[in-house]
Length: 86
Image (cartoon, rainbow, N blue to C red; front, side, top):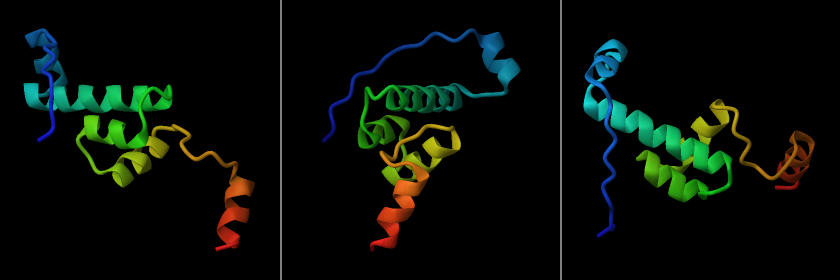
């Protein structure tokens, strides 16, 4: 069993209505945004950030790349050389 702690965030109803989000959708969006931010800052590993975002690690890393978050410790040339050796 994974231990969790609840955090309450108050979002004005007019914000929810204008954004066309349910409270569950806004909670998921906030978890994902926080996960990407903490991962980008190096404060969470990819695995822990993925857990916070509620998605598999591989999917989280792919989405991190889509958000412009660099997560590979290689330049493009270094990565090509590394993969060529496989």
